[in-house]
Amino acid sequence: MTKPSMARKLVATGRSAARGLAAMLGLTLAFGLIGAAHAGEVQVAVAANFAGPLARIAEGFTAASGHTLKVSAGATGKFYTQIQSGAPFEVLIAADDETPKKLIAEGLAVKASNFTYAIGKLVLWSAKPGFVDADGQVLAGKGFDHLAIANPKVAPYGAAGLEVIKARGLSDAITPKLVTAESIAQAFQFVSTGNAELGFVALSQVAVPGKPVVGSYLLVPSGLYSEIRQDAVLLKTGESNAAAKALLDYLKSAPAKAVISSYGYGH
Image (tube, rainbow, N blue to C red; front, top):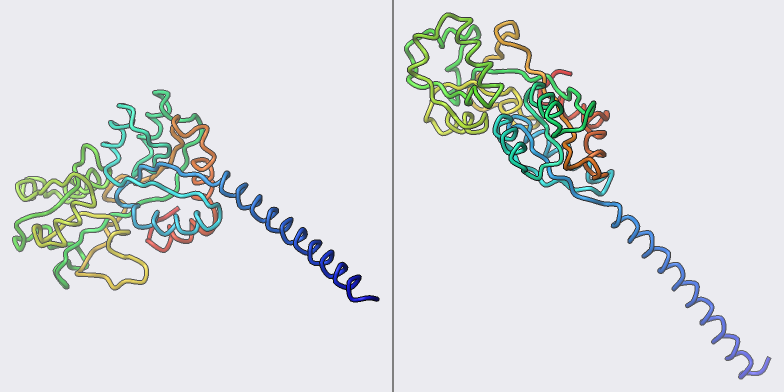
């Protein structure tokens, strides 16, 4: 083969390889665009007690689906009012099961989309080590001036705390000492900063996986308060959002349930 012929062959081979590479890159880019087109965002309203677990669940959800979450945490009752007023939330992860039912009845949530993702557990907590005894007798004593509780009108854990106080026959003694927070997150903050010696909060806020427990706490016997069934629901605003539906499906998955259990919730 002459040198010019060999050169032409090499050029032709190079062009063919370049076309093949370009085709492969184009195919890869196409798949990337398809993936990007299918990845979406979902606006989530989550009960404050579940904000920590949801953050961990979101990591697995995003890795598996590409979808991302825009999260607002707070009191379930306040979210209910905001949703009634047209707030753009697409999924509600509530601290009770009644609010999702009411939203469905009012036409603000998708029928039959609600389900229980966790059973909440109430604790009596102090930031001081050894302050809360194994029987909760500290409640009946005079060693504290303030007890933090989430607003029972909008926060199920706050309502549960009042039930415990009533069940122990301590309403008259403790009511003057109550410090009412907007949410269970704020109740936790009141105790952690020392503004209240005691507080009724969620187990998930105190027993965080991988972190040492701060202070002392008592897991309140479940017989002293109504069961805290926590439901999630697809709101009407998210009915056509695939990411919103995918999140609710993921909450039912084994990886999500493992995270939920690790924070002490029941199923």
